[in-house]
Image 1 (cartoon, rainbow, N blue to C red):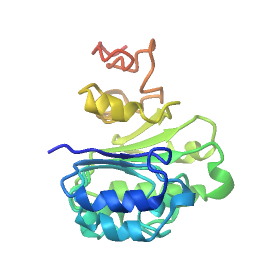
Image 2 (image 1 turned 30 degrees about the vertical axis):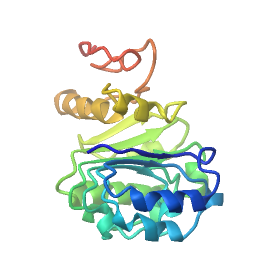
Image 3 (image 1 turned 120 degrees about the vertical axis):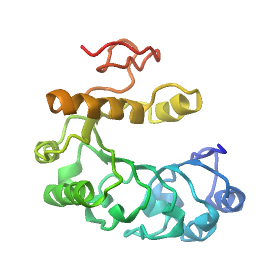
Length: 227
């Protein structure tokens, strides 16, 4: 069953609207929730308890109303694909590896990352996840190629670790998924296969109209050969 819950601040004018909607989203499989810091409300954590999404894109500190998410919550029981949009908070978290079905995860590293987060903490989180999460197939670092934290992260020796350039339009993945076209996860899976053969694949835009990223040309959905 696919029942998207796609929340933008401009579409849901206040958190009360989201709180009224989410209890009816028990069957949602792909849950994308972008809520600004101004919309944080601890009541959200209560209303999402009925949900068991498989694919989750969210700023967890806002959705769960806490700086330290509890990854043992039943809400996470079925999550296989997790994109964490918290820009730096994830570097202080523990327990992500406890997600029983996690196979794909994406972290964001923004331009001012090292100004507000410890690079060593980020490396520790990613290393621990790759080591302890036995179900993990892909770990993606999305970045703008402007932060020195990447130097340390790129030293992690694991073929499942994939680097991509953050797209200008964060809604592209959503549109590709619902249209049945290749998305970031498809690219990352292809990159892992490639890295098993030749080593680390250089980060590139997943979505571009003209540039072929490895085997998949994501601008038009065509599948091409690796360069």
